[in-house]
Amino acid sequence: MKVAVDPTSGVPPFEQVREAIRAQVDAGVLEPGFRLPPVRTLAAELDLAANTVARAYKELEALGVVETRGRAGTFVSGRGVERSLRGAAASYAATARMLGVSEADAIEAVRRALAAG
Image (cartoon, rainbow, N blue to C red; front, side):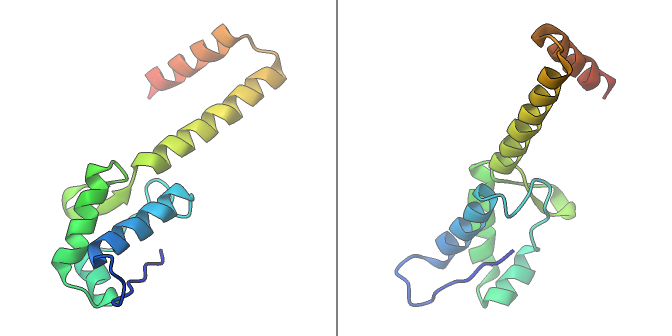
């Protein structure tokens, strides 16, 4: 993960951090499940106050881009998960077509797989 903050920019640092992370998630650079650095670690790396990074993470969570799992940390979710799910669905659909499976049978196979957990 690469985040840079330009102190001479008119854009507040928390917005720069938020948008840098969001852009990497949207581009697929940060995959679903990727654990973001702890707030204090990233703040120290960027020479920012911890509250600045915490605000960026909080806004990313409100947007559904990341999720915080208590002491376990903050992880990419949101759009990255949606993109991965669409990709997996497209791959599955292509495989089902190649196998000559009907749409109803392919959907039923997914239902069974999801129910099996």
